[in-house]
Amino acid sequence: MFARLDIELDKPLLVERRAQLHTGHNSVIRQLVVLSMSNHPHQPSSTRLVERNIAALLAQRREDEKELSWQEKLADRITAFAGSMPFVWLHLGVYSLWIAINVGWTPGLPRFDPSFVILAMVASVEAIFLSTFILITQNRMQAHADRRADLNLQISLLAEHEITRLVQMVSEMGRRMDLDVARQPELEELKQDVRPEQVLETLEQRNAALAGKQSD
Image (cartoon, rainbow, N blue to C red; front, side):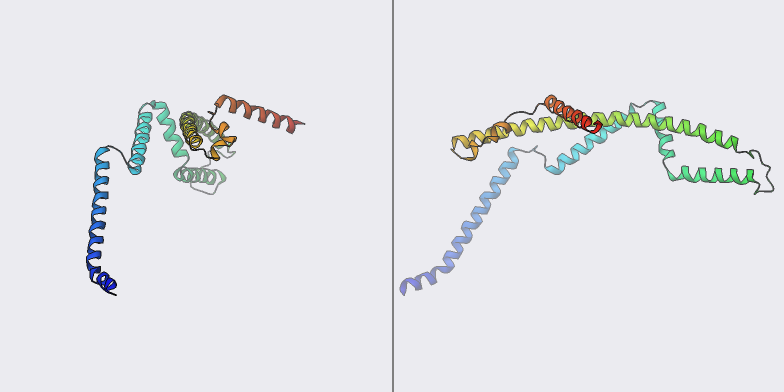
């Protein structure tokens, strides 16, 4: 009974001690966090990394645009205008007026192309030039797409190499700890680097086999 009474009397003191320990623990954690940040002052966060990557891509795009010749810039502008709604409304108005005049729906204006031969010639010449400008822009865009594909391939190969090294390290740790997971047979295959030439050769063989089956 007296022991329980002592505990009840000491409760405020215990609560105070626990609060002091909790406060001291939090202060230690804060000091460790500050120390870690001071040891790595230049370590960027994920947001800063994303912003840095976006800024680098935009800077590279601006550099690519500066290197364009005036012919390529002209082709890009014509292609951009040809793919816009003002281009559609302009041709709709011009062709409608052309047809209305030469059909005879405008009494005050004489017909200058009653057989619409000139209209067909103008449309054909315009289609030739527009298709040429579009092909020029597409070729340049394809070259940029090839560069991005090569960059993505190199990044993927680098990531695969790093993952392979991590698998090797974890497998060695598991082996030293005598874990059953470290003795799985598929880990030996995962610890090998992927060779792109073998993957491409396998894909070509499968595509050739599928093409042979479809031809049969």
